[in-house]
Image (cartoon, rainbow, N blue to C red; front, side, top):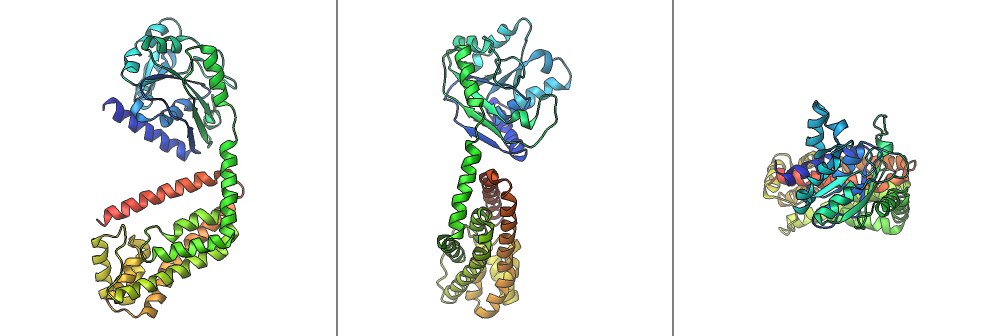
Length: 384
């Protein structure tokens, strides 16, 4: 595997791992071209965080202690494969090992160095000069990076715990160890900005959810989704209800009723031969629903919650087949409506849990939306 595809594989592997172990926040990005990245070092998880944070176009390599990681056995092979590491001796010969990375930098790649030389605690210890001589020899910038949270995730001589990791990428600094150390210490310093931002966002979204505006948004979204809008009512409930669980009492019934009203409108349009084309609806979906409707009439909609086919397709095909609106409405409430209500109830329970961890709101919202996007892509691809 060549350098950049391998770097992409490592990047997404460690992104996934860190997402599952508490989450990753990345602030900033490396400049284009080769650069020497200098970072604080308090945990073996630091390399995973940096590989997840740095874009694969930089195909980063990591300077690792030869006496620890490359002393023989399986550890060296794992270090090369999962961390793109190369050995640097800590007792004689280290400068020559670093100079061998000049060609990597001139080829536009990033070289990650922990100038402390070992894992530390708290404020970064004195930086050794090797990384800065390397940058000067290759004619590339030195980029300071601060890592926070890895010592909680994987403490020195400790076990893995859930913890959120933050990587802050600074702007290039002069190749001076003390200047770089001060900037890395600043970037790695404790910050509650992300948590406060998440809590404030949750409060603002909660106010919308409890207001008349929130009710209108959910009703309009759900009604439109049953006609042409491609995004499920469950998605807007997932955004609003966890931010204000008691709003679910109003928003979930509104979503169900508006979805049913939109379905009846689409059925009427289907009867008139005027049902609109909808995005992300494929011909295979229409054919399948037409066959189910021909066989089962109004009850065909019972397949909708698990098929991945939009509710609007069932409503339009029911109209084209001349299905009576009242039996269709009853079946739709018993299946489509129940699914919306079930998801709404789950969102309410999630919101109750988030009262204890309000700083997790944005993380939960982002993860849920990401999973929805993946699911939607897979469903549409399956019905192409």
